[in-house]
Length: 129
Image (cartoon, rainbow, N blue to C red; front, side, top):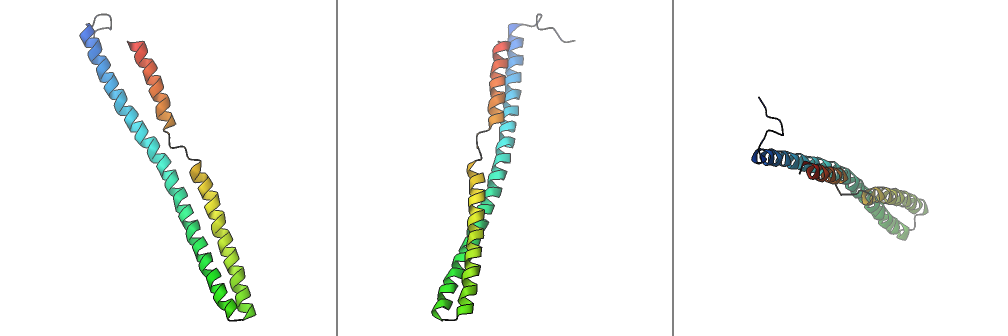
């Protein structure tokens, strides 16, 4: 049989409050870990696209270098092809970098949900005391 709050001693009430605070703290830490994990997953994906864009831009740079080599060789159709391919590949790489770098910089690493629940927990604790 459980005693009502009015029948329990001050020590029992503080003991229960300590257990609840401990449980609440563990739950908040779990929430923070989950929230940060989700945000880091999004950041990782965006960084992968930035890296892919960088690799494509680098390939475009290499093609442009090949263009210079062919241009020096004076074969008009060959260098024209290299120029077109180099510009297109470099443009695609630049587009990918710009698009996903913007998405990457917009990610807010602050665990906002956790901070909100901590504020709610603080209010609850004030009410309990």
